[in-house]
Image: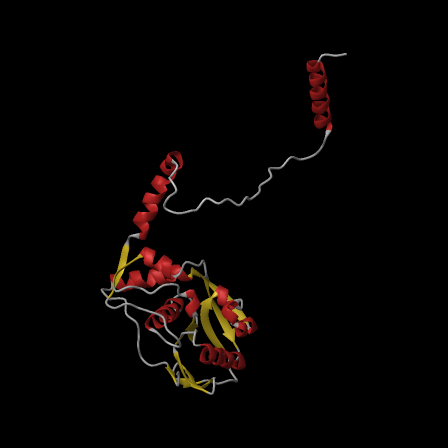
Length: 252
């Protein structure tokens, strides 16, 4: 009878030999496990990890605290039209028209994409990241006349879609007396509209955007466009204010 240590060595050598002959590719395996550890203020920071991220936190905090403009009054969103909605869609149209060859007819977004109000007082980079945390790209869509009417009917029905350079009246849940650039909607022609790539893909139930004849990215994120516009306003000595001229009538 062999000593147990010899059996162990023999087994180890045999296993090593077998493994050495295999062609299997070993890959790391990841798994998730549920724990009952609450993620809150009672957790103690790991000193080593804290020291590692401290320089990055300092840089991010400094960047997010940068003041880029001033708003005399708070800009908030609301159904149909609002100071926040008007401000964002108007700047989208204005800034996009600086980047394209032909003027774009309209701009549009949805209230769901505007996550927080802009407070009265100093506006920081961090405020804009809170307002627009998504990595949405700015795109220009070309819609035919019927799809354009569908867009306004959607806006009239839902109340979630601020639109720049257009007015309309809500009647029996539909959009009537639609005017774009001050002219009546002509359903025999095409219109261009700037929005986000998320909405262009049918996000927030914007199904009419999936009927676009053409879609073109302008090469800028929506958040970057907001930051750029506010910095330009500040450089020109202008405050952050919204156009409050009436755009929607007939809303209850």
